Image (cartoon, rainbow, N blue to C red; front, side):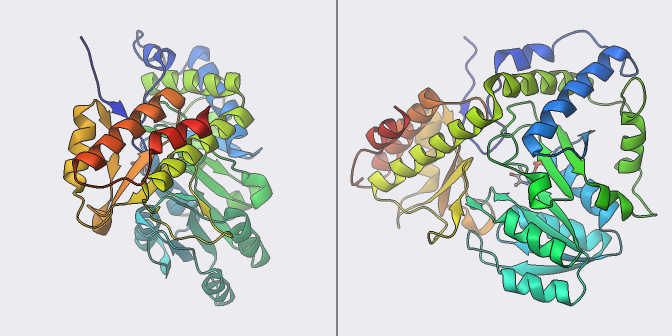
Length: 376
Ligand SMILES: *Cc1c(COP(=O)(O)O)cnc(C)c1O
């Protein structure tokens, strides 16, 4: 019997059968009306998930390719203010260092961002602001709307990594003044890994670099997308586009508002379980700040081994994530994104509870029951 582990990671996530089947068909011509229609379906739904009427392009490459496309096209040789409160903020900063003059605005991982420091950077001439909306490494959601306002006030471009929020949480690219937003296919959209989508505002186009990268030249994507049929500049990962189209149609069928509500409920259930067990969430937030709704990061109590806990969970057929970099061994992370719902969450929490108990932790209460109360 084929039996893969249930992936409850913050991406990649389990894919609906329709999405998997879509990838297994015979090759099609990527310069054809048929492919053009596939691309157009993806873009139509992605615009809804991004909350934008801006241009949206799909790039063959993982989420990081989308991040690099954003910075390389719109941040080249510019003063870039980069918010960092986790691994992916750090990645945007590192990419920005390659292309422009990057200035890090650093907070401890999982702690709120320093907006006053951004104002100072903007007053000192920052032309681009980078932000990770949902910092997957730490389980914190950053205040994109507020940051968008500050960027606009100082006429800076706003680049936002929405890789684990678009398609699973509320993202309002246009309303928040996001000039370039990015999503990856393998997270909340529940499509296979390997595609990134990028939205670009009219303001951003006006400030396009004259020295663009080659493969990630977004002006080339714009030109090809405007053709009949709609195309990409180079041969795209066609099977992944076919799968992404199916994943997008599923988003449309569910309805974005329902999908967001489902994601919020799942994260709430995981938080309820952690609280019942007597564990703390990794981000220490006051009422003004928010936890991520697509991944929950929980701190291990002293003396409880991450390896032991996750090995037990793995034995039960489920995979959750540990911490990255300096958080390795300190936290575990449960992804609640994509097509999963109560059955997967309850199984994951039951396995996690068992893993914690077996590793020697005395749980305060029944986390599975607390989660079921939320999910019921
Ligand atoms: C997963 C993730 C990425 C990186 O995407 P890749 O597909 O691994 O390149 C970037 N940002 C965030 C917030 C992520 O969660």
